[in-house]
Length: 226
Ligand code: ADP
Ligand code: ADP
Image 1 (cartoon, helix red, strand yellow):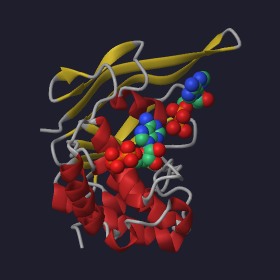
Image 2: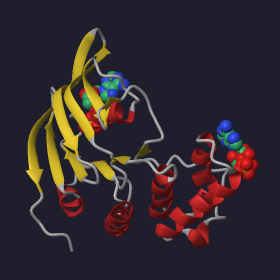
Image 3: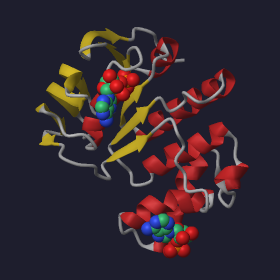
Protein backbone atom coordinates (compact mmCIF):
# COMPACT_ATOMS: atom_id res chain seq x y z
CA UNK A 1 0.00 0.00 0.00
CA UNK A 2 0.96 3.66 -0.34
CA UNK A 3 0.10 4.14 -4.02
CA UNK A 4 -0.56 7.82 -4.78
CA UNK A 5 -2.54 8.65 -7.89
CA UNK A 6 -3.16 12.19 -9.06
CA UNK A 7 -5.48 12.49 -12.04
CA UNK A 8 -6.21 15.57 -14.11
CA UNK A 9 -5.84 17.85 -11.12
CA UNK A 10 -6.80 21.52 -11.45
CA UNK A 11 -6.36 24.08 -8.68
CA UNK A 12 -6.70 27.84 -9.06
CA UNK A 13 -6.51 30.75 -6.63
CA UNK A 14 -8.47 33.99 -6.87
CA UNK A 15 -6.36 37.11 -6.40
CA UNK A 16 -7.52 40.69 -7.14
CA UNK A 17 -10.46 39.42 -9.13
CA UNK A 18 -8.29 37.26 -11.42
CA UNK A 19 -7.71 33.53 -11.08
CA UNK A 20 -4.17 32.17 -10.94
CA UNK A 21 -4.20 28.63 -12.29
CA UNK A 22 -1.64 27.05 -9.93
CA UNK A 23 -2.02 23.44 -11.13
CA UNK A 24 -3.31 22.56 -14.59
CA UNK A 25 -4.37 19.05 -15.67
CA UNK A 26 -1.66 17.43 -13.57
CA UNK A 27 -1.44 13.65 -13.31
CA UNK A 28 1.19 11.60 -11.54
CA UNK A 29 1.77 8.33 -9.73
CA UNK A 30 3.91 7.31 -6.81
CA UNK A 31 3.94 3.52 -6.63
CA UNK A 32 4.05 1.78 -3.25
CA UNK A 33 7.56 2.12 -1.84
CA UNK A 34 8.74 4.42 -4.61
CA UNK A 35 10.74 7.65 -4.10
CA UNK A 36 9.49 10.30 -6.52
CA UNK A 37 10.63 13.92 -6.78
CA UNK A 38 8.76 16.88 -8.17
CA UNK A 39 11.02 19.63 -9.55
CA UNK A 40 10.36 22.95 -11.25
CA UNK A 41 10.87 26.70 -10.87
CA UNK A 42 9.58 28.66 -7.90
CA UNK A 43 5.83 29.29 -8.11
CA UNK A 44 5.09 26.58 -10.69
CA UNK A 45 2.58 24.79 -8.45
CA UNK A 46 4.59 22.07 -6.71
CA UNK A 47 3.41 22.92 -3.20
CA UNK A 48 -0.17 23.29 -4.34
CA UNK A 49 -0.10 19.83 -5.89
CA UNK A 50 1.46 18.32 -2.77
CA UNK A 51 -1.04 20.12 -0.53
CA UNK A 52 -3.82 18.39 -2.46
CA UNK A 53 -2.19 15.01 -1.74
CA UNK A 54 -1.75 16.02 1.92
CA UNK A 55 -5.45 16.88 2.01
CA UNK A 56 -4.87 20.55 2.89
CA UNK A 57 -6.13 22.00 -0.42
CA UNK A 58 -9.23 20.69 -2.17
CA UNK A 59 -8.95 20.43 -5.97
CA UNK A 60 -11.27 22.43 -8.25
CA UNK A 61 -11.49 19.35 -10.42
CA UNK A 62 -9.66 16.07 -10.81
CA UNK A 63 -8.66 13.84 -7.93
CA UNK A 64 -5.83 12.80 -5.63
CA UNK A 65 -6.11 9.22 -4.37
CA UNK A 66 -4.29 6.98 -1.92
CA UNK A 67 -4.67 3.28 -2.66
CA UNK A 68 -7.72 3.99 -4.79
CA UNK A 69 -9.47 6.10 -2.16
CA UNK A 70 -10.17 9.77 -2.81
CA UNK A 71 -8.19 12.08 -0.50
CA UNK A 72 -10.53 14.63 1.05
CA UNK A 73 -8.57 15.79 4.10
CA UNK A 74 -5.40 15.26 6.11
CA UNK A 75 -4.79 11.86 7.69
CA UNK A 76 -2.22 9.97 9.73
CA UNK A 77 -1.60 7.72 6.68
CA UNK A 78 0.37 10.68 5.23
CA UNK A 79 3.29 12.29 7.05
CA UNK A 80 4.24 15.81 5.97
CA UNK A 81 7.54 17.71 6.30
CA UNK A 82 7.95 21.39 5.37
CA UNK A 83 11.02 23.59 4.94
CA UNK A 84 10.31 25.28 8.29
CA UNK A 85 10.92 22.84 11.10
CA UNK A 86 7.70 23.78 12.91
CA UNK A 87 8.64 21.94 16.08
CA UNK A 88 7.00 23.00 19.34
CA UNK A 89 9.80 24.94 21.10
CA UNK A 90 8.46 24.19 24.57
CA UNK A 91 8.57 20.43 24.10
CA UNK A 92 11.62 18.20 24.18
CA UNK A 93 12.62 16.30 21.05
CA UNK A 94 10.88 13.15 22.24
CA UNK A 95 7.72 15.00 23.29
CA UNK A 96 7.59 16.61 19.85
CA UNK A 97 7.64 13.16 18.26
CA UNK A 98 5.14 11.76 20.75
CA UNK A 99 2.72 14.61 20.16
CA UNK A 100 1.33 13.18 16.92
CA UNK A 101 0.99 9.77 18.53
CA UNK A 102 -1.02 11.30 21.33
CA UNK A 103 -3.31 12.91 18.76
CA UNK A 104 -3.63 9.45 17.15
CA UNK A 105 -4.69 8.07 20.57
CA UNK A 106 -1.71 5.80 21.11
CA UNK A 107 -1.28 4.85 24.81
CA UNK A 108 1.61 6.67 26.60
CA UNK A 109 3.84 3.60 27.10
CA UNK A 110 3.66 2.71 23.38
CA UNK A 111 4.25 6.33 22.39
CA UNK A 112 7.57 6.42 24.16
CA UNK A 113 8.73 3.13 22.59
CA UNK A 114 7.72 4.22 19.10
CA UNK A 115 9.34 7.64 19.48
CA UNK A 116 12.59 6.19 20.79
CA UNK A 117 12.75 3.59 18.00
CA UNK A 118 12.41 6.25 15.30
CA UNK A 119 14.77 8.66 17.05
CA UNK A 120 17.31 5.84 17.10
CA UNK A 121 16.91 5.30 13.34
CA UNK A 122 17.63 8.99 12.80
CA UNK A 123 20.63 8.98 15.15
CA UNK A 124 18.88 11.28 17.61
CA UNK A 125 18.41 9.14 20.70
CA UNK A 126 21.10 11.00 22.63
CA UNK A 127 19.11 14.21 22.08
CA UNK A 128 15.66 12.99 23.12
CA UNK A 129 15.54 15.30 26.15
CA UNK A 130 16.95 18.35 24.36
CA UNK A 131 14.77 21.26 23.31
CA UNK A 132 14.62 22.37 19.65
CA UNK A 133 16.56 25.58 20.41
CA UNK A 134 19.50 23.42 21.48
CA UNK A 135 19.73 21.68 18.08
CA UNK A 136 21.33 22.62 14.75
CA UNK A 137 19.12 23.17 11.69
CA UNK A 138 19.91 19.73 10.28
CA UNK A 139 19.05 18.05 13.56
CA UNK A 140 15.81 20.00 13.86
CA UNK A 141 14.80 18.81 10.43
CA UNK A 142 15.72 15.23 11.38
CA UNK A 143 13.30 15.59 14.29
CA UNK A 144 10.72 16.96 11.83
CA UNK A 145 11.11 13.87 9.66
CA UNK A 146 10.91 11.54 12.66
CA UNK A 147 7.77 13.33 13.82
CA UNK A 148 6.19 12.93 10.38
CA UNK A 149 7.03 9.21 10.49
CA UNK A 150 5.80 8.65 14.04
CA UNK A 151 2.31 7.44 13.13
CA UNK A 152 3.80 4.92 10.65
CA UNK A 153 2.32 6.59 7.56
CA UNK A 154 2.36 4.79 4.20
CA UNK A 155 3.36 8.01 2.51
CA UNK A 156 5.87 10.75 3.31
CA UNK A 157 5.29 14.14 1.67
CA UNK A 158 8.24 16.53 1.80
CA UNK A 159 8.20 20.13 0.57
CA UNK A 160 11.76 21.48 0.16
CA UNK A 161 12.72 19.91 3.49
CA UNK A 162 16.42 20.74 3.13
CA UNK A 163 15.95 24.15 1.49
CA UNK A 164 17.08 26.08 4.56
CA UNK A 165 20.22 24.01 5.19
CA UNK A 166 23.79 24.63 4.07
CA UNK A 167 25.06 22.32 1.35
CA UNK A 168 27.19 20.14 3.62
CA UNK A 169 24.32 19.52 6.04
CA UNK A 170 22.07 18.92 3.06
CA UNK A 171 24.29 16.11 1.79
CA UNK A 172 24.25 14.45 5.21
CA UNK A 173 20.46 14.77 5.37
CA UNK A 174 20.06 13.22 1.92
CA UNK A 175 22.00 10.18 3.08
CA UNK A 176 20.02 9.89 6.32
CA UNK A 177 16.75 10.17 4.40
CA UNK A 178 17.83 7.50 1.90
CA UNK A 179 18.73 5.15 4.75
CA UNK A 180 15.43 5.72 6.53
CA UNK A 181 13.46 5.28 3.31
CA UNK A 182 15.23 2.00 2.57
CA UNK A 183 14.53 0.73 6.08
CA UNK A 184 10.89 1.81 6.24
CA UNK A 185 9.89 1.09 2.61
CA UNK A 186 7.34 3.83 2.35
CA UNK A 187 6.29 5.94 -0.62
CA UNK A 188 7.85 9.39 -0.83
CA UNK A 189 6.81 12.47 -2.80
CA UNK A 190 9.65 14.99 -2.50
CA UNK A 191 9.66 18.61 -3.69
CA UNK A 192 12.96 20.27 -4.55
CA UNK A 193 14.30 22.76 -7.05
CA UNK A 194 17.71 21.09 -6.85
CA UNK A 195 18.07 18.64 -9.74
CA UNK A 196 21.15 17.00 -8.21
CA UNK A 197 19.24 16.35 -5.01
CA UNK A 198 16.36 14.86 -7.01
CA UNK A 199 18.71 12.57 -8.96
CA UNK A 200 20.49 11.41 -5.82
CA UNK A 201 17.30 10.59 -3.95
CA UNK A 202 14.72 9.48 -6.50
CA UNK A 203 13.53 6.54 -8.55
CA UNK A 204 11.62 8.94 -10.78
CA UNK A 205 11.33 12.69 -11.25
CA UNK A 206 8.42 14.78 -12.52
CA UNK A 207 9.23 18.16 -14.00
CA UNK A 208 6.69 20.98 -13.66
CA UNK A 209 6.54 24.21 -15.63
CA UNK A 210 4.95 27.50 -14.58
CA UNK A 211 1.80 29.41 -15.58
CA UNK A 212 -0.18 27.29 -15.62
CA UNK A 213 1.51 24.61 -13.52
CA UNK A 214 1.68 21.54 -15.74
CA UNK A 215 3.67 18.37 -15.49
CA UNK A 216 5.86 18.55 -18.53
CA UNK A 217 8.15 15.55 -18.31
CA UNK A 218 8.82 12.38 -16.39
CA UNK A 219 12.38 11.16 -15.88
CA UNK A 220 13.26 7.65 -14.82
CA UNK A 221 16.50 7.95 -12.90
CA UNK A 222 18.82 5.45 -14.56
CA UNK A 223 21.61 5.65 -12.02
CA UNK A 224 22.15 2.66 -9.74
CA UNK A 225 21.98 3.49 -6.07
CA UNK A 226 25.32 3.73 -4.25
P1 ADP B 1 5.80 26.17 -5.93
O1 ADP B 1 5.58 25.25 -4.79
O2 ADP B 1 6.17 25.46 -7.19
O3 ADP B 1 6.77 27.27 -5.61
P2 ADP B 1 3.10 27.04 -5.34
O4 ADP B 1 2.26 25.84 -5.46
O5 ADP B 1 3.48 27.51 -3.98
O6 ADP B 1 4.40 26.89 -6.26
O7 ADP B 1 2.36 28.26 -6.07
C1 ADP B 1 1.81 28.16 -7.39
C2 ADP B 1 1.09 29.45 -7.73
O8 ADP B 1 -0.08 29.56 -6.94
C3 ADP B 1 1.90 30.71 -7.47
O9 ADP B 1 1.58 31.65 -8.46
C4 ADP B 1 1.41 31.15 -6.10
O10 ADP B 1 1.57 32.53 -5.95
C5 ADP B 1 -0.05 30.75 -6.16
N1 ADP B 1 -0.58 30.42 -4.82
C6 ADP B 1 -0.18 29.39 -4.04
N2 ADP B 1 -0.89 29.34 -2.90
C7 ADP B 1 -1.76 30.37 -2.97
C8 ADP B 1 -2.78 30.87 -2.10
N3 ADP B 1 -3.05 30.26 -0.92
N4 ADP B 1 -3.48 31.95 -2.49
C9 ADP B 1 -3.23 32.56 -3.67
N5 ADP B 1 -2.30 32.14 -4.53
C10 ADP B 1 -1.57 31.08 -4.20
P1 ADP C 1 2.31 13.20 28.09
O1 ADP C 1 0.93 12.74 28.43
O2 ADP C 1 2.90 12.48 26.90
O3 ADP C 1 3.25 13.30 29.24
P2 ADP C 1 1.66 15.97 28.34
O4 ADP C 1 0.19 16.00 28.47
O5 ADP C 1 2.51 16.12 29.57
O6 ADP C 1 2.13 14.68 27.51
O7 ADP C 1 2.08 17.09 27.29
C1 ADP C 1 3.40 17.19 26.86
C2 ADP C 1 3.62 18.59 26.36
O8 ADP C 1 2.70 18.85 25.28
C3 ADP C 1 3.35 19.64 27.41
O9 ADP C 1 4.39 20.61 27.36
C4 ADP C 1 2.03 20.25 27.02
O10 ADP C 1 1.98 21.62 27.34
C5 ADP C 1 2.01 20.06 25.52
N1 ADP C 1 0.66 19.91 24.95
C6 ADP C 1 -0.28 19.00 25.30
N2 ADP C 1 -1.39 19.15 24.58
C7 ADP C 1 -1.17 20.18 23.73
C8 ADP C 1 -1.94 20.82 22.70
N3 ADP C 1 -3.17 20.43 22.40
N4 ADP C 1 -1.39 21.84 22.03
C9 ADP C 1 -0.15 22.22 22.30
N5 ADP C 1 0.63 21.66 23.25
C10 ADP C 1 0.14 20.66 23.95
